[in-house]
Image (spheres, rainbow, N blue to C red):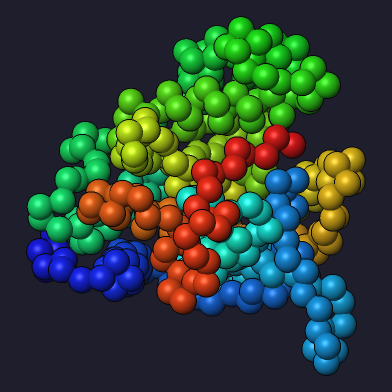
Length: 360
């Protein structure tokens, strides 16, 4: 536990918090022989999911002969090399997403990703909790309130959460059932929205707030339609082997505490044919919604066959810092406050409430 004095400017205090946090992350993963690697930021394929918007890159000198983008995640780059490297890896990557700014959102942020070969998402869930506890012990001061209880972080299947808080079974229900659940709960949903849009709305407005009874929570076993880059369960093909980690931010200005999605993890899909089919579905959805359609990462798909069974996770570092800072007495800080030299001034949109999650 860190016991150094804290009489310092907010800028210095936050810079030191970032330095201690990233050092603790590196220490934890290096101790477990997870190798740190660097990934390119300028890529031909920035991501496929419909909610992602990438920043295009144009070269005035012809450095690139095709369209390039700032990456939204280092995932494709890591998966391109994981089989060849034959080693567990992690990266602390600066990533870029063209999205509205808010307390917990910024177009530029840091993503911790690490990948463990020959492990599944259950083992990775345990390791994620161990990392979170290691970081809090290493970074917070002895007199700071501890953000996690001694008891294990609860693991809640998405099905159980929806049945308890929305009254609907996401593994069995139709779009009409989800729409009726929204109406019953007083949530405004358009009848022409698809299944995913209704699920996402209930998830954001009903399930996430209900998690705030715990200091942190894992949501597990998502419906297969929400698999993204995760494999589906061999025991129940209706279920995707993935989880999300949520942590509770303390109340600010008299408002209720909020649950923040901190990390998203997969038992990785390593079937290139299935992954291509999912990406083609994502491209079709982007076309329907009038969004830019990005190239399929062909090299990554080629290398998937060499990738052993693997679990991987992405964790938002600045969100982790906001959570840690809130428990160290800096409750009103924003993601943008941890970018030293940030030109945003108070009163800009970075200080606005966080925008709702996009419904796609």
